[in-house]
Image (tube, rainbow, N blue to C red; front, side):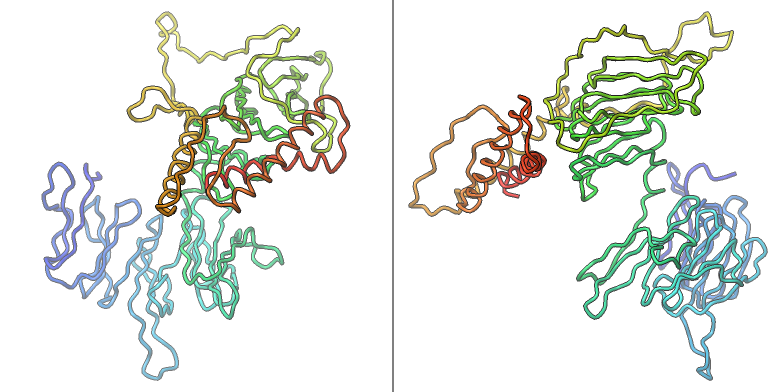
Length: 546
């Protein structure tokens, strides 16, 4: 049996020994103390069932669970030890030394079969850096860096090189965690004016001209640390979709109930929607509304979000839907149930984003619906309209979504139903209680708070920079908050840029009003409207002193 508490391994001048974990903290009998100062290395297996150490004479391997010695190897100079992920192989390394005739060095990297104790293979590994081969978690793949190449071995057969990845001056590589398909990231340092770079490949696709999945260059970099997060994100990635502004994207990921997060171009999280029954995300054509939905094996729940204020608009349910599409006007949504995905209850619905069904068509029981889609339009034809939170009225009778009840065994059917959940859902970040405040702050309140603090800090710095004989600036009168705010930065050049940006934004507002009144706009006018978001962002950055 495994120990009830984790063991603490201690290596020092008093030797090598183990201590029982809390609450006892007594010396463990699992491992007899090794006295002296000759222990150079020790390691546990990944699952903690095996322990290996060197005492200056031998490398010993014991079973922690069975408290017995498994193997002992004559390797007095070994200073590095490592188990493979599934405890199949023990890798040892000792400093490299050349043979007397200087024709070839003595192999100093040994790989032992943990079960039999036999040496599977010996290699020459001159440098201690990155000495240990890298295994996939299932040990199907093993790789090591050898002179401008990464050699790959399959199923721990080290007598045959299954594949090679050749890159001149390759310095380091990292295998991805998780199951197949395997990924490998490689690092090549820069030289002679060329930048360093990291490339990502999928095993075994190395030889094609465009085999690299990704490439990132680094100027003035002499070291790169590559860290895979655990299985990329925690759980599968269901969907990734870009906003029409191309400045943000939303990812739906994780084990059910899945998380959804908006990231910026630097992959910094902008807003966390918490968890829910979802596996897809859809931005509206104008990028101001986001729908998170759970289709396929989920019940068709949808969450409609205002992504400017990060406020929930509605939560309609489109059961059995196999298709979703935004209307080009950015106000209406199409959901459909089509064959051959589903051959029953075929039909489609037209929704307003506030949750009301404006139109519905059910295909007769002896017929099938194969495809349905919107007529496409060029961007800018439909102007962006203000978001409403009030449900748009409809003549279509509302339907209560069918809720599947959980199975209850006969012995419990006459007893009260207990409200229990397998997974507790995490609320969106603006609905989480703040420390010391029972009511959560809204996204707008948080944004305004940051703006206020940034402006306050900028004003204080401006006062410090001014000379003592200069008169203080008159206090600004508070004015109603509008899209184009009035502010001065204290820098004439910045103030000039802010003034020009506001002028352009006023012109765009006039063009939008003309479009709303039905006036046909020219191509250059539509292009101006499309630049509004970029101008607003630039204005905000200037006002905050970014």
